Image 1 (cartoon, rainbow, N blue to C red):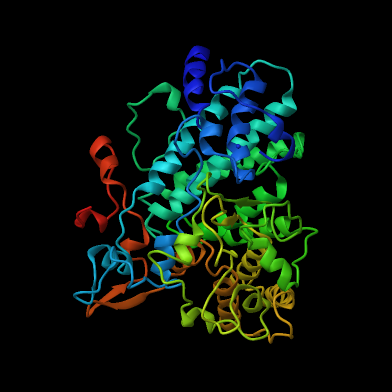
Image 2: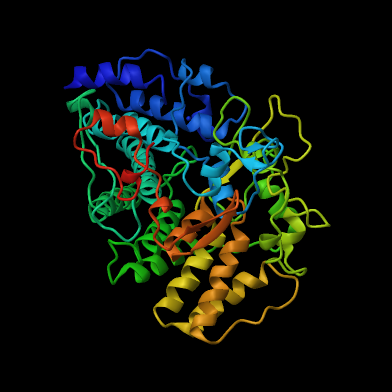
Length: 492
């Protein structure tokens, strides 16, 4: 078995990034993997790319392949939600001669894109992560703290990956159609045909991984070179997981209480900033220096070489016209510091990521801030109101609004109005943040309609198009895989 791990990890060691002291590590393209330190070096390759935006991918991995989760789904989803507008100046999506959207444009506007990239990227990433988790348990060495650091980091990213796969590919209300869980790639290399698990089973795996990390954290505290292996980040992720689970096909009565519990833990000792400049700086993709405040655990900043996210293409140029959808802009009051931080004075352009007018070559393309403090405030407020704790929910929302407005906001006293106010703050707070609005629309059962080429199209609550389709190649190669109902009637 050790020889199997060694052989596979020689390959996967090409695939896998750091914070602080991890940056001093220099993983090699070829390594006989047998010790805790060897596994640490492989994990360091992955973590390093997350933190060093100007490092060439080839220098890290040795080959031209992506070895991290798909953090960037902004282009399609921004069009889906209406946060961005398709450009009529791009022939791929609009035919000016005939005055109609092309098939590509029509598919984007009617929520029918079939890109298989997310599926491939997450499962490709899970391969080496699973090998690290399995192999390090028996790796040679006596430094148990180091073993816990490395395994804990890997477990967090495995839980994160399965959570995103579930959000993207599972029909929200149908427990039957989760995603495949594959934990042991070393046992059936290249021939595995895992079936779709229920959402309940996938959530169980995700929560087991998170709880195992919390157990390690009681024994071995975070080190300054860890990224995601830290108590506040894991609690924040758990709060988001339980919020998603609470109204899904796998919902349990305790979900909202758990969402509130973990959001409170993630918030402990932290405070939101009330600064236009900090809100600009936090999302400034060109600001790669270490920014430290309570608003987030860490930022993932992309670059020309890393390709982690391409928000310039998603929001500002190319397939989109770069102009603000007035429906979203009008949701921001003049007293909202987010309006001051993220929009031009005339309200026609948004530049949340400070990418407008920047050179493209060698430049950063965007940044991702996962499970940030503002989300925890709004999760806690929503969980409390859904559990009937109106007064406590009001207090949380009031504290949130005090940090985002220059004048005092009226906080509703009626439960339904209070819930709507919380959900409206989510629309404003997470505007143009990758998948936030789309996933909220899916979770809350929001319906939309559009007129495209003179025809009316409707996205219903719990529509099958709220899921990405399982890639056709996966269906072809895996005889145990089944397509999500609805997508099985569409030619991919």
